[in-house]
Each structure stands twice: as structure tokens, then as C-alpha cells.
Length: 117
Length: 114
Image 1 (cartoon, rainbow over the protein chains, first blue to last red):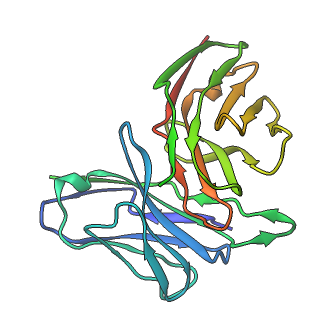
Image 2 (image 1 turned 180 degrees about the vertical axis):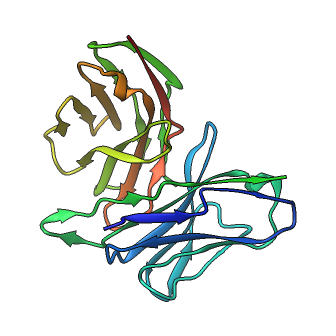
């Protein structure tokens, strides 16, 4: 299994540009989520999904869109990039509920570093 | 909203010694989970240890152990016999039992001195 993969690893954008951060997992996990990590603030939840066709907002959703058309993929779209969106973005996934007698563990991707000029 | 507080931005420890990282959380829930994640310079988030709130016994994973004080809402991480590879940022995280959203603390950077 490749686990959780994210592309690109690093991206530079100009203010106002749009882009999509890709996230994919091959573990058949129902739950997927996006976090952003900023210095001194830990990770904050942007959007999450509990299955294909179902998404919901997290703590800091403004300026971001998501969709979940398949179990495997959960792309994050920046509609019009702003310097405040300069951050490191993490995608995470997990099973829902009990699997093999244990509650789920969330697996994180390697992160995408985004710089908005 | 649940909050997780890590009051130590940085900690330094001598190789082979022990270091304890503090974490407090605020919740009115009775069913919840607590985690410690390690983030080395590679930025990969690695689960170190987890604790179910309903369990009274403190979780341990090799050299890592927690001191879970439910009444005090405290969840500290002890790293014993520190190794150079333990140098990283450590995040405390919380989630409610029937919810999968994680709330993270601001992190503690651990430096290991040779």
C-alpha cells in the first residue's frame, strides 16, 4: 500500500491564482480530511469527508472547496489564493468505527508546502 | 469548542535522559481519545501513542509513556532514554469518541543534546 499520497510537494502561487492540492489513499478508508499547519498554531481542520459524496466544513474552511467523488480521492481547491493561505497542508484518512477490534488510527500524508506571493 | 494547550514551546534533553511534555485539554465529553504525534524535520506526522479516556491504565509504547490525569484534564508524554532520533516537534491531539475531527495543540519542539 502507498498509504496517503499528496501532490505536489511544494507549490508557489501568485495572489488570485487557483489550484488543486491532490490527496489519494489506497486503504479503502471512509474518512478523509484536510488540515493546515501554521507556525505556533498546530494543525487546524479545513474540510473533511465521511464517505464518497459527503463533505463538511472544519474549523477554517473559508477560501477552500472540496469534493469526494470516489473513496480514494479527496482534492482540496483554492479558489483565489491569498497570502494568508501560505501554509503546509496535510491530508489524513482513517477507517470509521472499529476495525479488527481497534478504533481507527488516522494516517497522514507527507504534506504540501504552499507559498502564496 | 475543544481546546488543547501545550504550554512548552521548546524542551531540551540530554541523550539517554528523560523528558516530559505537558498537555492539557478542555472538554465536557466523557468519551474521547487523546494522542501524541511526532513530526520530525521531514514533516511526516507519526502517531506515537494514543489513550482512550475510558481506560484508567496509562498507555505505553516502548520508551514512550503517558500520564493521563482525567480529572485534571492533563495528558503528559514521557520520553525515556532519549535518542537523537527523538528530536522533533510533538503535538498533543484530542477527538471526541463518535467524531473523527482532531484538535491539535500548538506543539512542543524537542531537542536532544548528544
